[in-house]
Amino acid sequence: MLHTKGPLLSIDIGGRTTTETDIEPIQRRYIGGRGVGTRLAHERVPFEVDPFDPENRLYFTTGPMQVSRMSFTGRMNATSVSPLTNGLVSSNAGGFMSRPFAETGYGAIELVGASDELIVVHIRDDGVEFEAVPELAGATVPETTAYLEDEHGITSDRTAVIGPAGENRVRFASIMTSEDRAFGRGGLGAVLGSKNIKALTFDGDSAPEIEITATQNAIHREASTDDHIMKRQGTVAVMDLANEVDGLPSYYFSERTFEGVEGINGAAIEEKKYKKGTCSACAFACKLPTKDEATGVETEGPEFEVAMAFGSNSGVDDIVEVMKSNELCDRNGLDAISAGNTIAAYLAANDEFDNTDLIHELVEKIAHREGEGDLLAEGIARIHDELGVENWTVKGLDFAAHEGRTLNGQGLSYAVANRGADHMYATFYSVEYPLVAEEEAVDPDGTLGKADVLVHREDLMAVNDSGVICKFSRDYMNPERYEKLFDADFEAILAVGARTVTLERHFNNQRGFDRSDDDDLPYELPDLDAALDEYYDARGWDDGVVPDDALPEEYDVAGA
Ligand code: SF4
Figure (cartoon, protein in one colour):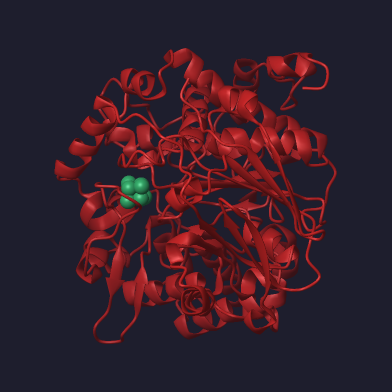
């Protein structure tokens, strides 16, 4: 099976030392990306570790095709114990970093320990350098990338950076790359901040060689010639449909349609898009560089999830105000989905929906932990009682936009996903909207009988995250293409995803996660209990807990 190459580079941040380890046996079993990151974390991170303890480890990994120039492969994975969910989380970012990362020659990079001063870690194929940067304390993401370019000639595509939010350990701080692309979900920016790392840079000339195949070329060609609506409107293209099917979270989840949808929908964003935007070498180019001439507001996005969180869920019907919120989150290094939902909770508690000045002020206050921002920086699950609002999270992660009360398979997916209420874990919504061919479509009503589809989709998405192949490639992929790309049987490829999901769950079980509190929703779904039973049966788990005999087979080998 095709897999990433190159050793694990482990960097002891406190001791300023590095070690290299051959991980090819792991790469053969887990491909790369999230699979390898999860397998390494499961073996090397203490199960009981606090997310901010120096012994927590953060992994950066990418996939084997990141040097192929194929569309949909300009993405990276990061894995660590999340300060937001307290479980193992992998987060995925686009942009341009994956290829500079591959050029270092390392298959995976591990960060362990913590520095006693703020540093930048420069990772090259001929060594690692630690640079003290006290002058960057409190710097925004653009200020930090400007420093790296001015002082070192390192462009933003070669960097991973945190803003004030990461330094201040905001539990939903992001790691930013290429300036405005985020490892967003799960607060891994706060883990980097706890290690006193302001930025990482990547450089080298040691990328592994890869054969460019006819399948890669065909996918790239189709992505470049297809007239797909996402090329014009990004993921916001689905907003009108979500609203029509009673599936657009609004006013902190109290409603499911938004009367101001036309102000924040696909057409509204298309009007502000001023140039093509993409990730490295991706001809699909679905990104959204947007600008408002009247106000000067300029950003990348917002995507659908952010247009929900800072738009309908905050009662805001003006795309420019949402663009401004998005820009403030990127600048400060915040996951814009979690920031928007957390602020929406505050607006609900204080009857302040649509107060855009307050919203923008709160983004800054959260990033700097000032005033009420210090409370909000803890995330909804930890503060909802104090605010007096419902806890709209699963496992501490607040909800994505695709509405589980409307798309019930997506709702079931939110309940069981190891990462929490995350739409990309299975992308179940994509077969429940009336958008796909009849043979793929799943009736959105009900949860029973959906477990097998859910398991399949979770496994397939874990393969994509290990590949690393963007999930928006879905219209261009099929089992035959997976087999050709990875040079393996489709069932064997899916088994990589199953192993990854199982190890995530087993890791979280050791931290106390089980069915009772953790696979639960803040709303009723039809037959949820029975559907959970079906899902656990399909996985071979006991009430949400992985039994020893369901662990991947290498765990039978002593010392593996
Ligand atoms: S489809 Fe969009 S998000 Fe995915 S790699 Fe291409 S440009 Fe990036």
